Image (cartoon, rainbow, N blue to C red; front, side, top):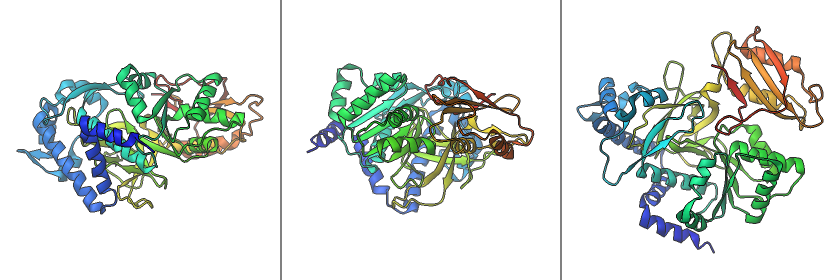
Length: 452
């Protein structure tokens, strides 16, 4: 018997009822008509724009100028005329983006981005935004079979994220009630990976919520050692772009479905795959997601930069925020029957997109898939593709123990030919054998690097 679920619901009802209200709201929308889903989203968007116009100095000017709000009246037909929000604007405008007044019950607090693409930004969030974020994630994970109180384990790569959730008496009590444990993955020696595997086998969690690179390394260790590991109901990955070859490695190790959850510190958990794996269901209760081309125009069914509007970001509105990711929106609906719109793909960071000799952007996924299908299985440990300032490419290769540059099954001439098909015949391609590829400052493995 799962005694924890009613205890958790009672605790939320007493301390943070917004979480339960949001879960119920999403459940009421999940199979509604697409028109009803869109209408609800637009109502929240209209309220956000009016709040931003009325209570922030920056958006008072911006929304009036573009015609999205005039004399207190919101015109959603002008939504796409609102200038994009960027990290540079956030740094320059500072407190002009903060709301000087919020609806009753909302309390602001400061937060920081992870700084994956450079210098972190400081921004404000509020308690209702956070509660809606939690409710949205609980719903998304529930779709994957994770019930309140089921055993869960978070394996994450950022030390600060874990320590904040584990320190103090309150955190320990909450973790006991929620039935969750934490494992750090910012340093992974073989001994450390064995400890994680042993803990999974001992704890037998129903659900794993994992940093992509951490669980990928653990999965490779399991596969290489031929270990037997507990099979959870589902494994959800976050922290970085989830590539198909990473999913394959982890599913081979755990014999469990591996899904991707998309979001960021600034806007929260805005999309997640379901077991059908037809795309990421967009949390329309929580966000508006646009895919925009190089001219800043919204597009469908093509890879483009993503812009996100956080519908519950009242302390500091994030409206049409270019957070640096690429992906595509699709008109198709998921076979699961839920009618939320889908992100058809999430292809990586904007800073990872290469530029060829014709000044065209080239999707980094092309290189990822090219390299993962071009060597003998088990021969190559790691790889990295770097576009230098002169637009040449340096391919860093780390062979597995016992293999050399000639024994990994690599046809260098054929790989170069395929690269030049998209990068141009004059693209210089060099291959380097290296002992290791360092992690980035944020603890992520840099498969793609573009020098700027």
